[in-house]
Image (cartoon, rainbow, N blue to C red):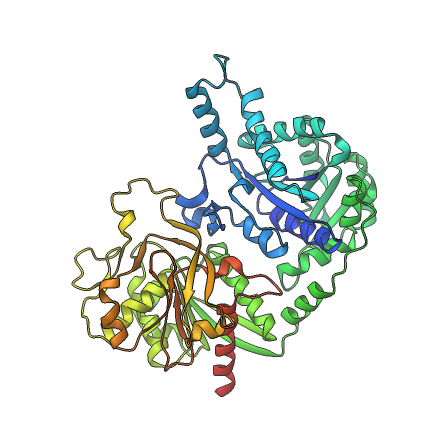
Length: 538
């Protein structure tokens, strides 16, 4: 296996994850099989207990691992299916080392950062290598910024690893910023020089430097960076701000032939140039769509772009599939509580209520669901959004006054949503929810079954503690709510829908985690299609 390590310098939020994912996409289009990995230097074991305001969304994998949102980019840009082995944090590293020390695995030796902690980091790379023998290239992104104290051990581990597997099998890529000083009218290379100097102090000489820049990278600056950073001029690559969509990133990096530079470095230069027709076709449909719809996303973290990252991307995928631009209006659920759904949401073609935790904004989400149901506006509820639809239906159609979830009202007279039985008594917050891919049965003759192409079983990813309360199943169905899917093993309700509505569907799982650019998730595709039909009817 060949290895690519992607580090970042100067500032955070440079787009290392997108750069790494773009390289993965380009290599796959050259016919190589890639797999991606993320090292996060924070001490949390995983991001599962972190606020979206701190970390953005938590991306859930098939095996139930709660991971960094960059793994979402990895799965969307490439065909690789990630597992918990593909996301490593300092918390996991230190936890493993301490457990080994307590068991006596170190045979009485003094446990030290080097070699014991760095060995644990290298072991994770070897584990991924050993469990994926058919992969040609492993791409590992190191979170944080070079020079951060918490990242030093990861950098040292990579330095050692490159020596062990041979430098001909490793390519180091460093992503930096070229700031434009408006008053001087100049692009400055000094931060990049300093960042690379710091990396070299730590024992790593980058093979390729990717420069984030608002403008293009002129030859003078390319030469200067090459000279002061000890790389060939052709290995200084521009990573420009894209105009329309992140899916332009592979095409932008391809302009400087980064895939050719990488395969030449790791001895895979015999592979053909990437065939990007399908990717270019998708990007064209995103940039130049024939139609347009407006969809309101009513949530509690809407001011933060990354909180619902996979949902926004899934809407883009579905929009491109229908040659449609999806104009997203972010609606703060608390504002709906204060001013009403009609005043805040207004005339839209679809309403989506995403997942979340806690009672803030819940009544606003319920009002949004009611507004969609009563006005025949296509509605899509995801996880909590499905529970919201159930609560609203119970209150306003079944006349179960005070219906609620026990998450928000433990004394509700009609707890139509309740804590899963196996969750009772659980004290730890991290990694204790219903997590990962589960098999569900689809019932024929329902909208959900039609959207999935008549399939009788589906595999979808979950992340929640509360479920549809089966005690109220008969009552809700008598009033017209259709249960179109249940989990195969436990019989838990997975999808609810209304038949006499253009599109009113709630899914307990997270379909956004399995949507890809040229393969939109069927529920998102169906939702956007219904929104488009609604817009055209107007």
